[in-house]
Amino acid sequence: MASTKPTGKDGAQDNVTVDFSSRFAESKLFSQVFSHGMSLVEETADYLDGQGRQDARGLNRHAAIAYASESMRLTTRLMQLASWLLLRRAVIDGEMTIDEAEREKHRVNLEGVKPAISDKALNALPEELSSLITRSIRLHDRISKLDAMFNEEQRNSPEPEANPLEGQLDRLKAAFGPSE
Image 1 (tube, rainbow, N blue to C red):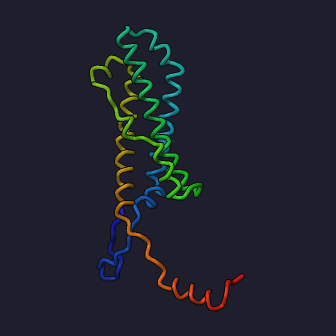
Image 2: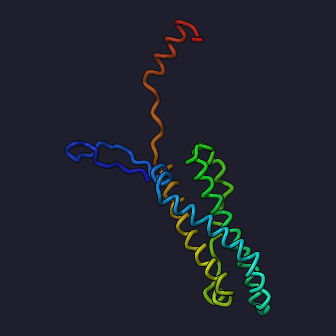
Image 3: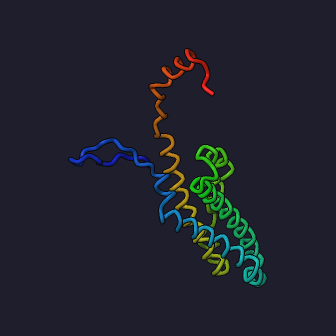
């Protein structure tokens, strides 16, 4: 969230805006969130393609249905979170502008992947899957909060001021012709 901080010699507010999204994106914290998210995606894929298949075979019918639906929700949730992280990383790396990322962000649906599992159903699942679901929910909560902060910052950011010399420059160009 953008805020002001004291910058004057006397500690008074000089109304310098601190851009949360830029600061966060360049921080060690973002790197940690990004690494954690991508590691969780990889760990989930490894489990579901390996040990998870074996774990699913040993479940009763009710638990097998819960396993199938929750593993699908888990992978969908993680793909949406990874998409959000990758958009932010693309902006940091200069591969996209913030405006381009915002236009692409409509494809990322953090609300549509909210957790929908009860504790009872979670406990009926294999321990490793339960752990992955719980960790993905924590990551979802964290990214949702960050996304809300970014959105709030954008809503509250002032429109860029027009260049006060622009009108005079236009008159000079009109008087002397286009420069080449």
